[in-house]
Image (tube, rainbow, N blue to C red):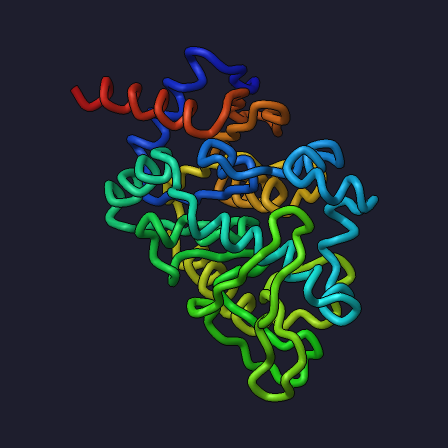
Length: 286
């Protein structure tokens, strides 16, 4: 079967697959959050457009997404990560999340979410934390920057004041309750030997168990949204599950929508595409 290449057949075929499925796997990258107003940091210029102050400092995303900052300059580290955390909290997930939520309800909550996003927006929409695997960690938990303990704790009460001009965090910054070293988000960064993986591994085990419990012949709709190619964790997982279950992959991405044979490629943004598929679903149900 040749890949579907966008309008209108791609939306119609995606709707048919979702209508007929028994289970849903949602795989999502940073592109899903763009329609909520969140930056996706696509390329160095994209990052600097979102954070021009770091252009002046000569720092890009790969420089800043490094755990060394929490030891060398924790106020700068929390200026960057704290600003993002505040932004994620203040942002309302776009209507596409609600569409996805309605679809998983149609399959009696037989679903899982596999996402590289750390913003907690699936949980905000109502998706169960028990059915989400955040493969790069989450802003909703903190850990010790020195990894003095494997303990992680909730970031719910963490509120940071950030200087918007310099993106430097004001004191106090979060501290480890055990050793008083600076705390950091429980997020997998670049060159991150100090990441505490326990919660991540627990989520991964629940995800693997869900997949293994799907019976032979299960019609699983694999819906990938906004997953890029630079760090292909999400795209690779989508394609792997599609192969294992011999099901087509629905790939939504305005720039990188191509995929393996039988992939339904939708070269549009997440919200627009989900709305269009929902419109086609309504026609099928009439």
